Length: 92
Image (tube, rainbow, N blue to C red; front, side, top):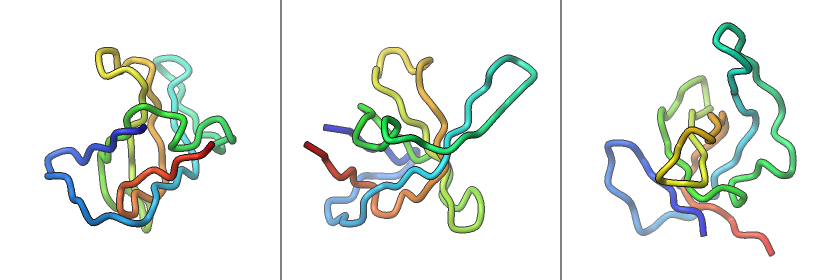
C-alpha cells in the first residue's frame, strides 16, 4: 500500500479523492531537465511513497515526489498532477 506524505502538515483521516499524475519531471544530466507524459507504469499505486511538495505549484496542479524506498530516495521521480485528498486508488 502506498504511503502518502504532506510535507509540514499532519495527516487527515477523512480523505476521498485519489491522487492523479499527469506528467513527470526528471533530469537526464546536470544541464538538461525534461518532462514527459506519464505512462501506465507510472501511476500512483505503483509507488511506495508519495510526498506532496507544493500545493498549487502551477494553476490547478500540484508538485509531488514519488519513490519506493524510504531509505534511498535517489530513485524517485517528481510528478505534476492533482493531490486531491491524498489517497491512492489501489489496483488489482
